[in-house]
Structure formats: C-alpha cells, structure tokens
Image (cartoon, rainbow, N blue to C red; front, top):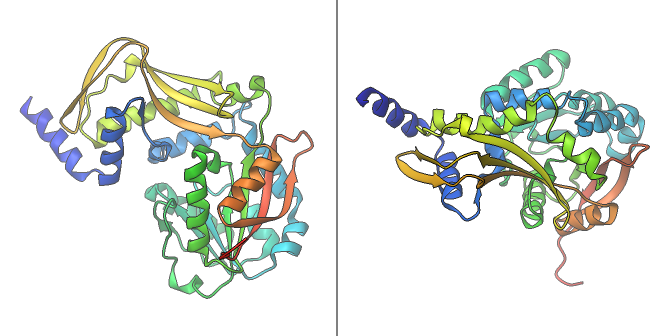
Length: 327
C-alpha cells in the first residue's frame, strides 16, 4: 500500500498542472466535463490517427480529397513563400498536399502532444528536406510566440479536421482571435476545415464506430488520468457514448458509469452514480452561413470556400480582418 501511494504521489507531482486543474475541476462540476484537448497523449494521438482511417469517419478522407484536388487554386490565392503555421498538427498527414501546392518558406507545426509532435515533424522533414520545419509544443488555444525565423514572413494558419467544432461557439471565437494574434493580424490568412450539418445516420457512426476504436480513444482519457494523476478510476466501469444533440447542432461524446463508482484522483475523492456521465467532447456542425458568421466574429473574412460533391465538409480560406472602431 505504501509503495502504491508513493507511485501515485510521484505521478501527480510530475503531471501537467493544467491537466490536473482541468480534470479535478471537471470531475467536481455539474454536469461533469473534461476538455477534449486532454485526449491527446501519445496513446490518444495514435488512436485518433486510427479513427481517421475508419470507414465510418468521413471527415478525413473528404477533406483530404479537397486538399489534393485544389492545389492550383491554393497556389493562386495564397501565393508562395509564406510560413505555414498548423494548429494542432497531429501526424500532419494532410499537410503535404498544401505544402506541395503553395511552396512555403517555413512550416511550424503546433501541438500539445510533444513526443507525437516531434516524431511527426521529423517525418515531414524527411519528405521536404529543403523546407525549414520548426515544431512548437504548446496549447494553441492561446496566442503563441512563433520561432524567430518566421517572425517577419507572411503567414498562413492551417487548421484542418474541423477541430474548431470541438469548442462551444464563444470559445471558438476566442480561438480564432488568438490565431489572428499568433499569425500577426493584417495580411495573415487562415485555411480551416469546418464540418457541415448532415443526417444523424451519417454523424453518429462517425463517432461510434463498429470496431470500437473511438470507444478506446474516449476511455483512454481515464487511463491517462490514472497514470498521470495517480487516479484509481475503474475504467471497466465506464462505457463510451456518442449522441446527436439537435438543439446545439453537435455530436457529444460521454463516458457513462455502468454502476455506482467511487475513486480518487490526485488524492481527491469522487463518486458517480450508475448512468451519470463525464462529457468529454463536442463536435459542432455548421451550415454555410453559420460558418461565415463564426469566422467574422473571430476576426476573419471568408475569401473562398470549397466543399465535396456531397456537401459533407467545407474547407474555407479566410483573411484577417483589421479591427474597426465603429460599424
């Protein structure tokens, strides 16, 4: 018992303070909720990459198809010799399509998962040996100081995958404003993926696949809490749930307790009743006008929009809008 307590204390002391703060606050909240950004430790990042290849998960292949087919238009509208700043870069699997099209002067991937970021950056460097690749480990939800070599270059933000949908609209607007600050405001451009509203029959399976990979991705958050915060959550007592919230136009992911449970995290005790959930992710979907309004609120003006033939997904190029003192 003493050895187990010592290991828990060691894990808690080494944990990211922001992770501990968000988890403890989220488990104590009503309803309980933990920000989705904490999915992405090494294991979570790898599981998400598996999700992107699942037959039910349409966003990745649909957006990749747009990126692969519109290179000449990107080159014409964006131009060469920009620094490409990718927010939440992950494995950067879509990025080569963009880099080949616009011939940038530098590439800066930003991600919260350091080990995954560095391995992905190294792989991309090998594919583009003449391109400076400058990874930054950071939380892109706040303005970020970019590496010195790109400070004077015109910048293109790249935010694929409809990650903007993981945030409630006020937070999404704050993020878009932070991106404008990071990219330097005037003259900056942003290429962003936004998922469209569509049939529930398509949406729900994309977040609750038959193979159970998304379930493993969701449950991995509990494993991470146990490992990094000295928790003793009985992971087997929870199940993954995905549902469509029509009123909020979003998919929600939850971890539902299958029985009454009691556990500790960082020395704090929690209890959950059977059927109670921890809300772990939202994925908001936007109609065309909704997406444009969101971008305008965040300080961006739409320059061009592309979508697939079925209208499942949109890729939008926007320009930073100078602040105005009056209408």
